[in-house]
Image (cartoon, rainbow, N blue to C red; front, side, top):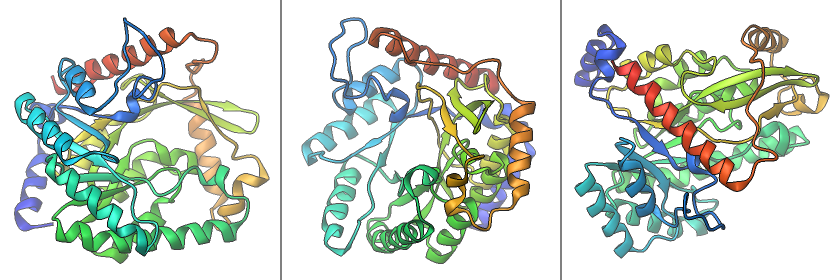
Length: 343
């Protein structure tokens, strides 16, 4: 961090949160519209979003200042349309991109970054894996994934540096926080940082606040979410819920993030779906965690019990229109809560 950035961070940390947030508008990650985005349905009341311009037209009216969305398949002409729309709407854009899987994939990656630049993008989010406790049945398979992920980061960094862009690697229920920090330290590049998700790492029995504190110095963008939790027979369940309706200390997390990186944009990620099962009492869950302390399990289950919701939201059994309506309500409730945090 530069001296100016350090001083700005110290100044931000000294102010009350509402004062720091007063001019900081909320952005939206496209996953918040996982049902409406490119939906294969027809509805006059809640029409699907077919492309980024549809999304921007809609979220502008909700007060969002930024959109984080994938750029795969964009033409240069479409990218120019997006940039012009951003300028006229006083919005910014962040991209989502897949890192190159191997050397032959670098050309595709660079093409997508150049197209993103044409749209005005300077920050992109990338996720390298999925829920490791579901994906891998052998420790060796996870280690192979990790080696490939590090190679992908190494292939991507020179392109991002040359184009003066930043890539945030998300804690996507794949990396433990110490693993992601080690990877970013190894890169030692301002062009390869973290997309800090405020809730994902609970699925790996990590303290959400500790994860935010560890990743804040590397943050280039943020997925802001709240979680509701509940025990079940094989561990616990967790669900995204509208900001302020869960158990995460969002105010404290924002304090930490803004103090470390005052220019960060917060993007709401409110995925409307059924609860995720975290089967941490199953032997198979632990295959990729041979060195994880049992204390992490005890602490997490105690926290879940202390913060257990009476029930978690469900979408199963709903009609498409009911789910789409709930998705919109969840986003609007989150916007309302964020505005209250600023006042």
